Length: 402
Image (spheres, rainbow, N blue to C red):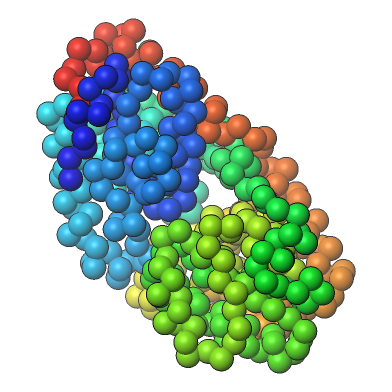
């Protein structure tokens, strides 16, 4: 679990970057590319996924082993997570980089922020912990141990007004990432789907536990939709971190024809007339593609009950939180019943006015997310922080390079 020292020896600057989940891997890869464009002398190592690896990050640990859903799943991956944290802290102590970049994943990254700050290493946090939803007092922890924070949701900066933290709203990085490669007709042909049939997308999440929790209910709902709308078809865009074997094993018990699409996620989503989507980043991706949807989420009963105690928002879907109202229906925990989900999706597919209202709300969400170029703006802030810390004689220069 050590980065390749030989490959990094030519870099004049070293940056640790940590992203513990798939969405962070995407945003981290774009940030790395933008920073390298500004300063080709920067070398990156850290924790991430395949996208960050392709962007040039030397992985100390792979994020697929660290993503968890709910409190109970933490136990199964705790050993790997603790090992990764020990490794990163050991590297920070022995060969400190010029900058530490932390992407979301707060329970892991906030401890690294404290360790790095105490070691005199500047800390840039890209994509804020969800202090607006729970554990709001973390804003004071971040104020103490983070040098600069880049937030991506329009209402987040206001959360930090009680602090002196250097906060910047950079816009949402998905505005740069969500693009369809093919026209609708070509995409339908590529996926073997009929252009005249109603198409429903199933997006059960980017983590195995999410898929195990949500896909059976989604498949049950799809079966009901197929009965109500015989001329319908279903597509499942496969998240990068999810194996085809897992999907096949779950689908085997449901006699329903589902087209599983690898890689061309946005095209598979974009051809859909409606979608059922796991709460999270995928809801914003569907919103940017203007796909009417329902939001679905279930965790273990213990995790849900604990969440009810500490979470202080009325809605959990990012689309609805950004809009400040319910733009799309949410089916959470006990409400995530296939009959209810199917009933709402049938209404969305068949009721033209209902679709128009939802689509209009999704356009408003897109406008609130800011303009494209979030990764470039965040990269400029990060590179500026490196220059400022070096200019201030913080001890960053002259360190042994990885």
